[in-house]
Image (cartoon, rainbow, N blue to C red; front, side, top):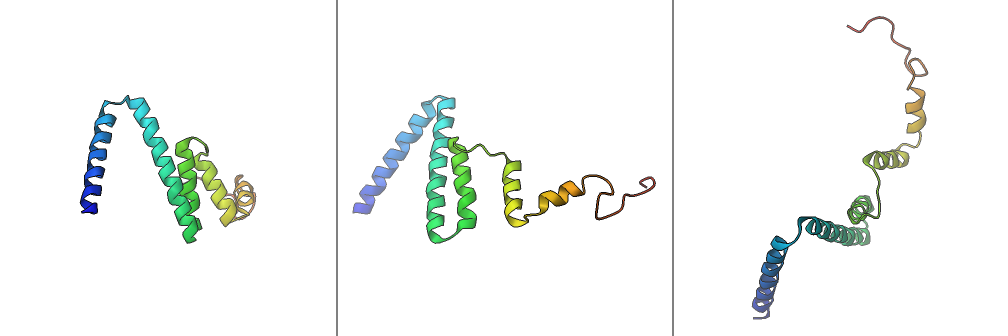
Length: 113
């Protein structure tokens, strides 16, 4: 019996939320949904962190913070941070090979066919 009552309360609250959401201003609704998504992702990240899944918890937490507007990292910055952790010498390698013939392979001679 308590499960039936709880289900009815959840159903009524859900219908009320849908009705309120349909009448809301789209810009305000977007802000609210981003905030709810950000908080949900932060809670999920904490849950994953407590389970020891750090590799999944950190990106989820950063994405949640980004939805809340607390972190404004561009995808380029995320990739750079990832490569800094996985391959510490990647910046020197890419900057060293930026010019033709500046290391590694010799500069190609002739036309491209």
